[in-house]
Length: 290
Image 1 (cartoon, rainbow, N blue to C red):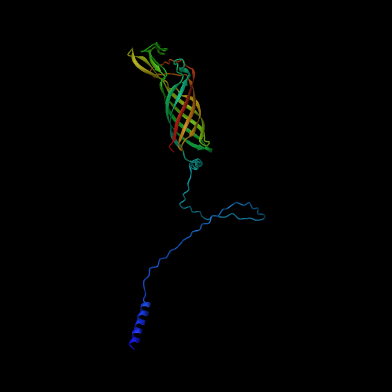
Image 2: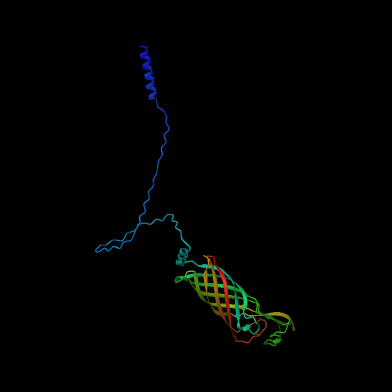
């Protein structure tokens, strides 16, 4: 009996231990495979006979954040097609000038100078065609110097005004400022922009005389040019960067009656009705601000 009871206890304990819940750690590994399908569409010409399709009606269009890469050429085309905004910028350069009236006074045929200008343009008629208006100031260096106090010159001597007031020549050279307004038509083809235009300009030459003051010839006074000259221009621009251009330009003016005046004296050392030609070759760089 004792052995039977002991055997039943051992059997009961073993079964009890087998029925107890134990905490196990379970590891789950998931393998995800993503498949992507690419569809290639090819247009097929189909002829439908006797079939009519109604045009689709769009109820609403909603555009959310759309970010597409637009290269420089596309951006330029979009700005051209808009046609509603102006473009403006600045220009600076150098050049050479040749005036026929100065050839007898100097052996140097070409006069060197610098220039600075501002411009504004707008597309018209065609996206590649535009009108440009600009204003420039030029500074031209002297190629000769006539100074009666240092040496004999072509213009030495005593002159008289229309009311017989004496004027004594002192000095003159062709160093001067020039102011130009320009209107030109520009056509853009790829990176090249040929143009042609009309000009209105003023050369500010200065000549000095001794003039009478209190009946004594002792006052130094200036006689300046003030007439407006007209001409034309032609050339081209080449786009080197998105906003930078290199400019090559030829300008020609017709100067009618080169005249130096002083408001206090009725006198002009040059004969009236003389016509002179003035030609310029300019090289510059332009920057488009907008």
